[in-house]
Amino acid sequence: MKYAVSGEELIRLFGLDGVNYFPQVTDGGLHPPTAEFLACVGLPTDNTFVSRAEPENASPTPTELGPLFDERGSACPPEQRGWVVLGYLVTGLVVLDPVSGSVHSYPEGEEEGRLLHRDVESLVFTLCAFRRLVDAYAEDEDEAEEHAHEFRQAVTAVDPTPLGDEDTEWNRLLDEVLDGMW
Image (cartoon, rainbow, N blue to C red; front, side):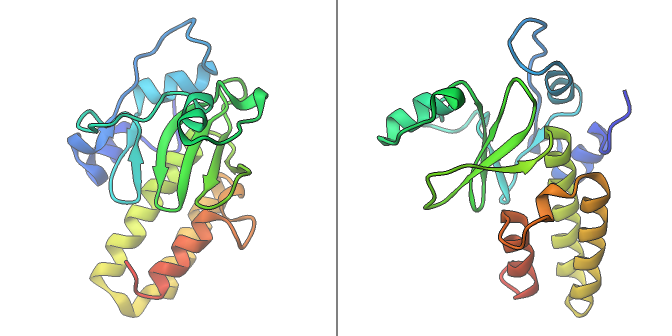
C-alpha cells in the first residue's frame, strides 16, 4: 500500500532505533488501516515524540487511556477509556481512537482532549516534516520562515487538522522553532 510517508523515510530520518513497529493483529480491535500502517511503516520516536512503546522505558505507560487516567487520578470519559496511548508529543499525551483511527492529544495542563490528526499516517507524516524542518533550521537559521512555510504547505496538503487552529500543538512547536528554542 502507498502511504504519504514510507518506512524507509522513517528509518532515514529517525534511524533504525528510532522507529517502533507494532504487531499486526487481525482481530485486535484496532482500526484495520491503522494497524496495517503501524505494522508496515511504524511510529517514530525522538525528542519531539516519545513512543509509548519504548522498550527502555522503566515505567511503561498503560496502553489505554482509561488506566492511564486512573493512575493519574483523573476522570476519563467512558467512551474514551479504551483509546490507545501512542506516546507523548513535547506538548502532551497523544492517543488513538481505535475505532475511527483518529489521533487526539491531551495537552499539558488541560483535561479535555482535542483532535490532532485525522489518522496515524498524518501524525507520522507531520513528525517527519517537523524533523526535516528542525534539521533544515539547524543548517540554515536565516531561512527559518521559508522552512516553516514549506512545513505548513507539506502538512496541510496531507491533513489540514494539525495546523488548522493557531492554538494547536504543532503551531506552538513551530513558533518555538521560529523563536530559536529548538
